[in-house]
Length: 266
Image (cartoon, helix red, strand yellow):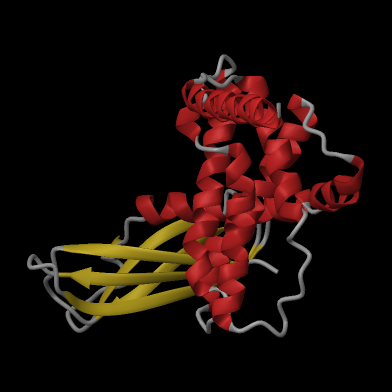
């Protein structure tokens, strides 16, 4: 009788395992919807927030980076990846893509955590955090995102950071835009036979004051070699203000100018 019961139990377990494997395979092939994305994001945030309150002050650089990796993986285990979803709401699809991009930006920034490269960390991990805050706020406002009672205080804290995050995102979007549209040209009025100046008029279109805007120019020859570097700095760049940037250039011939723009707003 015992053998028979053991045999039945083993068969039941085998069927359960096979059913479980089959279910996982089906899940992999399941087309996920708009509602699934919001639901999975809610679970992902709860997973991340469940471990994101650890004190990192006494951690080594490698420990901090491992911890941040763990936090992001805890979220992505639930939210999965963009290619798993088929959206009916195209606006939500765009926001979801932006959210995955923000997670990728944070992943990129992990290697700078705990290092002296603070600027790169701010431009990647922290900026990814700011993008996530603005998007979580929109998912909450427009798509009914909620979390369990245990995590409500954390969600409230995130939503309270929206104004600051939105400012940082707007300034970063501005930096991204002008980095690709800047066009310094020879300033004929300023230049003479002894000196050459290049200039451009720059307008702050963000709606916010930028405390400091750094514009770094590299003059590159036809072989791709940088032959001169120079910079200009704008302080307290008010919303709507225009500034004429004029720089002295000690080079006669070059192929093109490359720009690197960095903004600081505190």
